[in-house]
Amino acid sequence: MPDYEVVVEGDGRRVVMSGGLDKDYRKIATKDKASLRRWMENWCGDVEGAMPDTRMKAQERFSDVKGRTVLIIAFKSYQARLYGFIRRVAERDTFFVTAIDPDKKDDDADPKVLKRAKLEAFRILEVMNLR
Image (cartoon, rainbow, N blue to C red; front, side, top):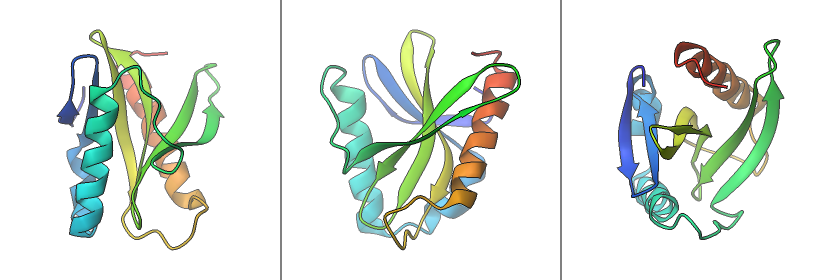
């Protein structure tokens, strides 16, 4: 996975994040980081369990000219969001964190952050030759 590091890993799932997102990640309040980590651990550890929309929610589906589709999903805490998408890589469902909103002001996703998440998602698909 190009420039991505594992953040949390379970038996059948993992969450990975680009080192390029460190600056935004450091801006997240400590309590929100703890909450996000807890929800990522829950997602990685309970493959059959459903995550509540209040903590992991589908945001928007995007397609590109090559016919690939990504569904941008957000891990949510009180004031922060980790946006990304899921693909199966090396026998594990992998959530790629592709954008961060460290200080969320309202319930709606910021269109600029969603656009960054989408562009990075398609870059990853291209580099890793994924559909």
